[in-house]
Amino acid sequence: MPSITELGDQLAGLTIAQAVELKNYLKEKYQIEPAAGGVMMAAGPAVGGPAAPAEKPAEATEFDVVLESVDAAKKINVIKIVRELTGQGLAEAKATVEGAPKPIKSGVDKKTAEDVKKKLEEAGGKVEMKGH
Image 1 (cartoon, rainbow, N blue to C red):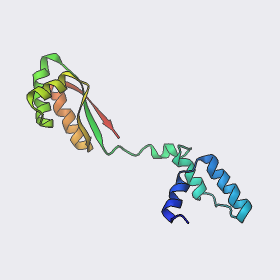
Image 2 (cartoon, rainbow, N blue to C red):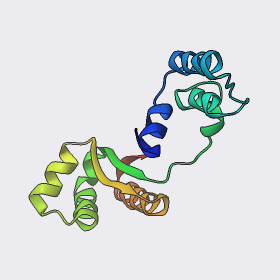
Image 3 (tube, rainbow, N blue to C red):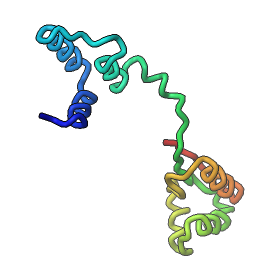
Image 4 (cartoon, rainbow, N blue to C red):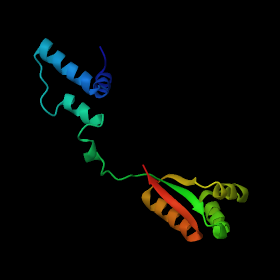
């Protein structure tokens, strides 16, 4: 017999069609009919059903800061900031700046990402923050 965890994982992984099939089977075989809002209904939103937009307002908690481009006249300033932010050597930082778009920081909190973005923009870089 599967453990509760295994059974729960299997139920959560059901497609809508499989959930309906399971509901019909339980009703026919055991006269069990899930209540509205029960496990069968919870499977719907997990696969992007109508409830998905309600989850959208959740704000990103991790951000990537990507150097998109650099004003050629300010490239040296941006290289200095990239070295400061990443700990890269001069040649590596120069390659990062010249190879833009390149990620400078990944998986940082919003405040850190905003600080990094501000420093890079003040130095002459065009920066994008990507939340996830």
